[in-house]
Length: 238
Image 1 (cartoon, one colour):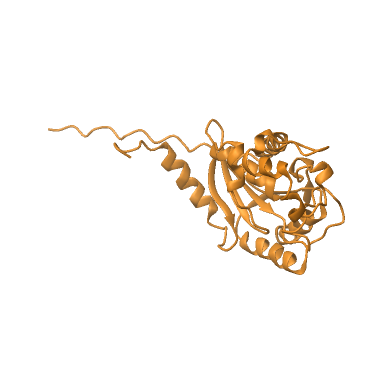
Image 2: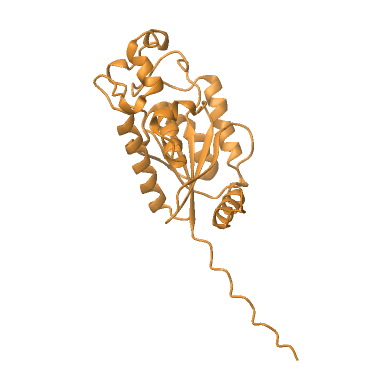
């Protein structure tokens, strides 16, 4: 009589994963025209407020554990509808603030584009420091360190971070393993959501970049599927 083989051991539980949603603030009256940097007093335009409401709508059904925002008004105003819908407080975090553009703060982009240094900003940003301000490398290190702290504080949870285009681009580039000199190839639009999944002991997984349309309630399912696929062996020739 053939013996029945013992049942296969149960698969180990999946490691806890933390989901970070990086939201660029909504449109302002100077978006695409001026480099506002950290200057205060810049608020959302009417379109920006619509974008902020849209972000909150898209997050419906997602179990948000924490909401963090750059201290600048345009980021906080974008976070407010999400805070209202989730009944969570917005915590200001200076690590999410815009890059310090120093002497370039408030300058028109058309003027900056004529400077020789603008080519460095666009093509070799890792070598550039804004006059009297921050370097792109410093900005990326600050942003990545901030996200790591938030991951630890909300391990296994969903965290929404309201920030700015360049810090989000730098964080996405880091998660992808892309050199900082190539981060300008990433587009982060006003009111867009980019999503990074973090699992202890694994490289980050970028689930979404510059998303402005679809509902986000299914992100947990997509995240679990992504983790499982990364643990599967690749077929020969793939």
